[in-house]
Amino acid sequence: MTRKQHDSQHVIGQSTSATRRRFLASSVQAALAAPMTLGVASEAARASARPIAGVRFELPRLRVPASFIIDDSTCLVNMGHYCMPQFAAAWPKRSIYNKPWKTWPREIPDSFVRTFGEWCADHGVKGKYSIVPYPACVGWLDRLLPGWSRRELLESLKLVRERMVPDWDIHPEMITHTRVIELKTGRPLEEIHAGTMENSYPQEHKSVDELAAYLAYALRILKNCDLPCEGITTPGGFGNRVKKELSQAVGEAVRDVYGSELPHYFKYVAGPKESTVPRIENFGSGGDVSRTTVNVWAGTGDWFGGWDGDREPEPDRYCNREATAGRMVELIEKREPAVMLCHWPGLYSHGTLKGFRAFQQVIRSLEGRFADDLLWMKVSEIGRYYAARSLTEMVLEDRSVRLDAPFGTPNCTLTIETASPEAPVVRHGDQKTPLRKVNRKIDLAEGTYLVGEGQCTVCFELRKGTTTVSL
Ligand SMILES: [Zn+2]
Image 1 (spheres, helix red, strand yellow):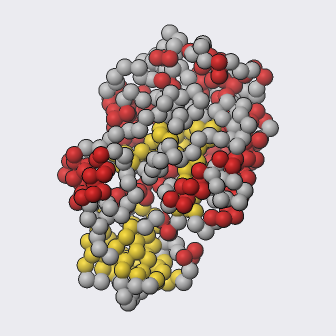
Image 2 (spheres, rainbow, N blue to C red):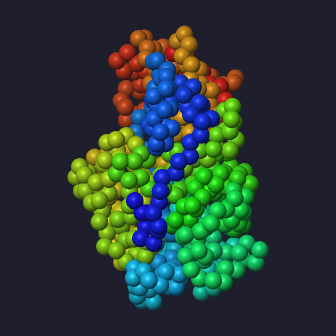
Image 3 (cartoon, rainbow, N blue to C red):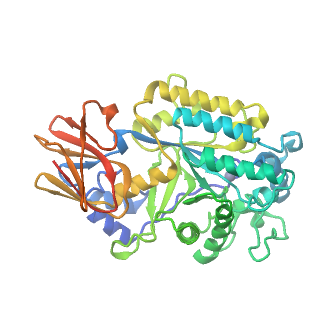
């Protein structure tokens, strides 16, 4: 379960606490949610939780959430070309870094960003797109990018804002994705070894504040570039030795720099037997959710072109042409978030676009069988949905359900057992929203309801605070 060839092993985060177990145990729907964590704590939570009789917090619009995580993207700089010699210097014994990087293009052009972005928009594909802020120490995206004109840099950022931002979370993938930067001077640390590379940093304990300062430094550059951001991606094995601190640092840094309500991060890839359901981390005591951070997971390896763009794509490992096999099919059939992973240089494939064509094939195959059963979402949207699903307290009253939600979410979908549903009405504060009836599952969308045998499924925007759904 390595995330990429140049990663060290990603080990599962164990981020549970007694507080969290108690909270889960009292949460009326915890047993209905897919398991949130691995290990003993979640077993305890599942065993002791009482589902609320008659109400089920479903998947959004009864569909499986899907997302596409793209690592190692940035503006113009081909990270495959520029990272390779720096990795080779830090890990001289690893032959995988002995590749002809000088023959590879130094740029991944904006024309490719446009082609990719438009194709994904046409097919509804959404996800996460990294913007490394000081990519491989080539230049600062909020200042200058040596090798490209100022105009090219500004246009590239504008393209990301206009074409990618609407459907993609933007994450810094730390500061450089290569050398560790000394925050006081902005210079790479002098020595060159695994301990001074972001991929394997830090080698010793770091406090939450120290890590948060590093993350905030990366986030501020993206903020200077006028890019929105609610989360971060760790480059390779960044933070492997300080997983708990890292999770807290993400919450601190993202809230500090961007003021986001619900920060998230991407670090882990689920193995075949692990869940891709986001882990909801950092509860305070007494139900305090002000530090909550969502740990979103990917469910596949990179089987397009690899992090350096040098691999032969294997699209069938995601989904074969008939959509009967492949990891994405497995996840969809398990009804767990189907989150694909790849690296940007691997879609560009040194300009041959082999990886991109393999990706198009996978999406078309998925559309062939699952078009009405998938809901493409940004990773932040998946995180938010599961945070709401895990943390909302529900009480079934006479012909109504009361929800107390610390976080709202679009497309909140509940199935309520009832013999004779009247037209459901959602009440939040002074606002009353009657729902409209639909007759087919594929038409279920926000603002509608569907009647089934002895039950009624409602879909509405869940707002933070108290909401009542009356039937
Ligand atoms: Zn990366």
